[in-house]
Amino acid sequence: MPVTYASSMGSNLSISSGSSDAEQPELVDQTHDVEAAMGDLSSPSGGTVVNAAMDAASFGEDTYAAISADVSLLDNGSATVTKINAEAYAAAQSQGGTTMATTYIGFTYYGAGSYISVGDNSTYMTSSEGQSTATSSSSVAAMVIDLNEIGSGGSSASPQQPAPSNLPAAIRIVDDPGCGCSGSEDSEINLDGNLSTFDAGVFAGGENSYADLIVDVFALEDEMSTITVLIDAGLS
Image (tube, rainbow, N blue to C red; front, side, top):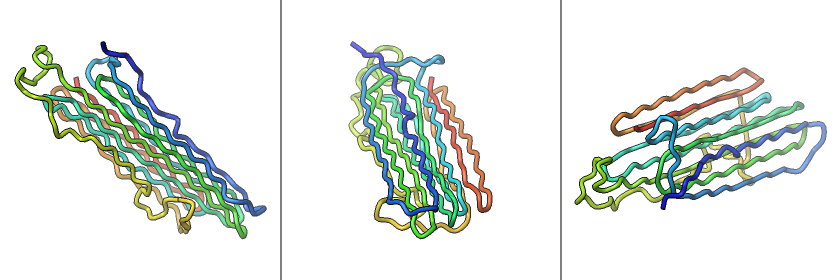
């Protein structure tokens, strides 16, 4: 019997700030989240719907913000496969000033199937010899496989068609968003300037599909770097 569930993750939020008035040890805050479920959560419009929001922001003299995101929905006749991979990173440095870095990733899934998601959030802050550094990173990966009903009249799969054996079964999380400054405990952050970058994509394949991608990017010299990504996709 199907179990109804609501699957949403929006807790990957971290804030780090510091002042160069005094040296202080590195502060590390790290969280990991895993969620799995089976069932059906109907959307207001029916079908399969994914809404995702990502944000990265850094404030200081030298700043960097980056988001990498990929959302895909595919109905191959035998199953509907939904995949979400998103990473957000922010870093800031100041000489004699304060710094702040924040990241956020949240998404909501409406539909049916076997569902799993993995989330990670890390925050680092150092202040040494008058220089303050703050970094924040978040990542989320999720996959949903909904096997279409055989012979129900509501699926494009034929009654004789077997369930697919080559469905993707792995979720990959990349710790470094590509800037070469992942902010891990052993890495050294050296920023120069103010930069915001993104690499985002959305795909919806199937009957009555839609996909929407919105990106807002901003960088201000000696002040800040911000980026926001909104993704919507669906099949009905």
